[in-house]
Length: 142
Length: 432
Image 1 (cartoon, rainbow over the protein chains, first blue to last red):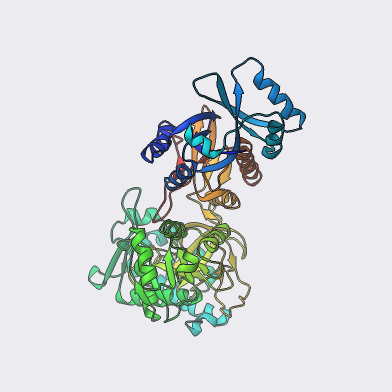
Image 2 (image 1 turned 90 degrees about the vertical axis):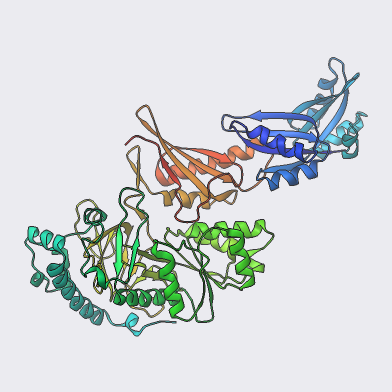
């Protein structure tokens, strides 16, 4: 049901983001989707990559504070209202969505990366709705 | 083990030795050191006015500035050909301060450090790795001669090349480490980076740390990295007075015993220069009573501490000085509040989520001072809420301790500067 997300703490300083990307590049870690949120002082870079474990290991080696966490990558139709409908179901299950970002692939379907306060329960809700989600092995194939 | 019987003399016996030696020293400097004679004459005090230990307060102070004004040998009480060693302070501002030793002084120094090393648990069986910078700095050679004198095997590895330091520790089975507390922590970090766990893979059981303030929080940090049964003691000294060996902690870790047969301590109000009553906190002033080369009288150390006269459980009768609360020099005045960097350090070290390294930046924005504290994340998170919680808690605790608002800046692990000698963690960017 869940996939691994790689998050990295980054100070708001010129060049820090590219240092992270440099580490990933030199270790052949490919980024499939990303979200960069920031405050005035620091940011959190959240990534879906083809090799999350390797990415975390190499980033830690290079002195970055990075973490793997469980997220759900769900498939939705490229249609008005499809996301809203799912969110409503999650909300009704009393689960809080912490953040989301898109993972777009060519074609009629889109993927959304979702982190919630209760990943298991979210999974159940989505499963009940027949929503397709990506597993780590699916992510590698994207 | 107590190195010398003198360390257990009664107060009366100690004071008898002190008075004899003080009178002798004052006579000698009055006769031989022109700047002293001039100062004493200006104050209208003669050597024969020193009849009791209390009369010490009649004598003029000596400061670092006096040493600079008389650079290099103007305050020396012996001709240069009697010297067998010359050291100098780093002298970050202006000329360095120069100190010289006769053979007698080197013997005194060795005796003093031998006592301090024994207080800290050293024995002839120890392999002592000295990770202080060798050179003009007195720290390394001071500990070197003292530890060698008690029969411990010295590894004079100095500072730098930290990975090689760890290799020596492993291969020579080092049991005693001499370093600044910040370098000792750095070495633990390097060891871990090499896959060596200082607690399991190394044999260090004693740490004699000095040349930098050791706060209780820092001591705890030392235990966390080096093992909880490592005896971590701090010792005190400064090159002007001799080097390390002025005082040191015993196993009861309740203040540093001052070698009172060589040094007389006083506590003064740093502003008025008045001697404060026993037990009060103020600036430490030291008079050297057995030095030949450079017998400083009433030297203002700029260190803030308190003297403890109650007897110690270890059996030593020498007065103890509390671990330093800061230096009157290091004291920052931020928005009118007196701030010692050690206070900030205590707060930072109380958070497991943060690493032990930090940087303090003071700037001026318009007419207001701004305090920023950079700290390193010691944990990983994917949540802004967590990051905000940490910064919020640190900020609140700083506010409680200092009464000041500070901006807390989180940094990635291993990004702040590491120091091998004295850490320079304060950047005061206000134009003075």
